[in-house]
Length: 145
Image 1 (cartoon, rainbow, N blue to C red):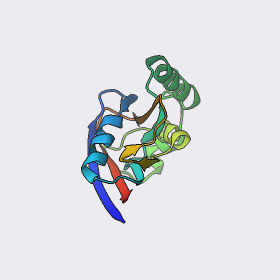
Image 2: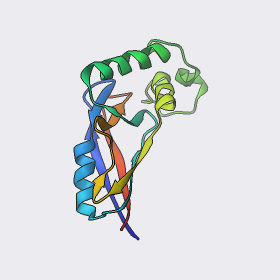
Image 3: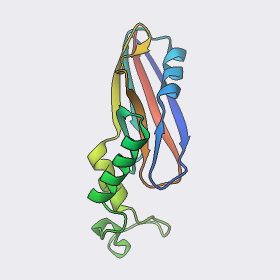
Image 4: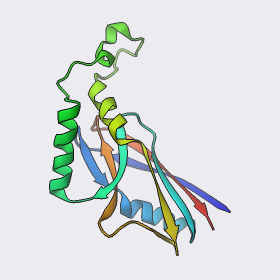
């Protein structure tokens, strides 16, 4: 069995930013030369998420509204009480971002057949920035034959 890994660096441009990274993951899969196996896409951050869904602008806007309704940026969170936490002086107030991430998750695993990810017709790999803008890293791990 072959193993291949790369880190994808992303630069978000908004506080809540959704980026389609399907083509980047496809390029990494091609470089791996794996024909049958699995691709795992994993975010290394607790205030970002990865999901497979449709990259349709109105749906993505609905997602942003949904997340803000369920964990509003203006809400009060115990995590944001810096006087009660042992944190660096420049720590961001971002309890809302962590809660949004908990609803979404940090990884996706996609089957590979004949050298292609087996995504559905309208499926894309979406990287979701919840506390940007920032530079971020996503691990791509591929295993198979």
